[in-house]
Length: 350
Image 1 (cartoon, one colour):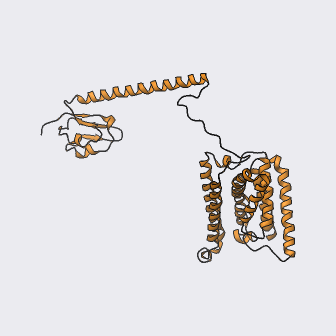
Image 2 (tube, helix red, strand yellow):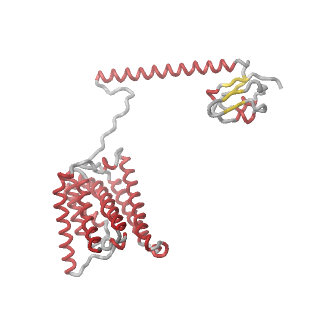
Image 3 (cartoon, rainbow, N blue to C red):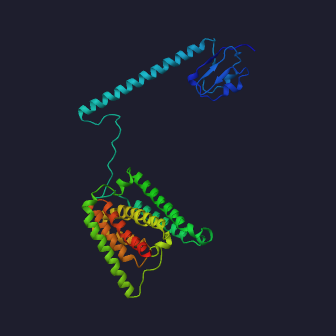
């Protein structure tokens, strides 16, 4: 076999190893750091050049042609760098000239469009509100179906049921968070910006929140006395027997506080005040929007007995959100409204 001159251009090598596999003399060495030909072992058969798909190895007119290829590649690289430098200098000059003239700079990145807002939350479209409400309703129904299924008594030990309930609720709220985050991303905003969770001074709202909590709890007490007098008692369920639902020990109290007092009210406020109320406010006015969103919020709890007191609390939360232009005071009211019966339940149980 006649010896053919071979040239190597390591810059073009993609480390595919085809050349090394076909070389009968094992004269080619390829690693992540380098590629070279052992010229003392190479017999110039040209099999490596035929196997190379990138042109890194080729048959040339002389053994010294590899140096010419390297020199040519170096020259081309220098020319590309010079061209890129000239283009960058041109862009800088154009931007400077545009800034002096008061015009937008050429090739400047587009400014971020401001988020379209209602007075305190993002401007939502009808289909987005429908996606949120239907998505939350579907997730709520799913977690109720799972928690109410008969397999609990057969598969899950009695002592593990509270932890399993917390796990299911955690998945439920995580799915809600994913849905809301996706809509916030579509608005090119985070959850805080899109859903009206902007900073506000809770100290300025503390007196109003405290007064509304007391009024809401007083309404619940009076409502309970009236309904009890007419023989209509609050139906049994998780809200009336939190100790049995999450456990009566300290761990049960902690899980109840996290799920019922902290996490649950947050997502309910984001959905019904941060999305629904903001959407209705632009179309029906402030007070019709507050009342309608509160009725839907109360219906979400699937309890006819709780319809009136929960709706009343929703009206108070909606008024706070609009008044303070932020969802945080409404969330504080909701949190306190749920905290009172939780702590009373566990205190009386002890």
